[in-house]
Length: 102
Image (cartoon, rainbow, N blue to C red; front, side, top):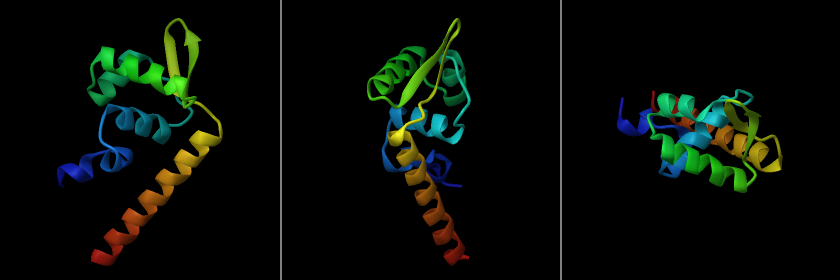
């Protein structure tokens, strides 16, 4: 399997930690994660994850759901519904392309 195939869908299109975090939260929509959990799952530093989550919160894509411990999840709104639809379409096209190659 190539390195590209191991990347999250958003990371294949938009590089960087923001796309990795957003892709994970979108894929596992409804689950809440602490910063440490995201760090461990995605192997990204605490400082970068926290900064990215705060930035995504400013753009109304994630929300802080609990105070102790602080947990984050994908916000349910028009932007995130469109993001999930976009991801679904990209994955569907990838599957169709793979099926045609076989």
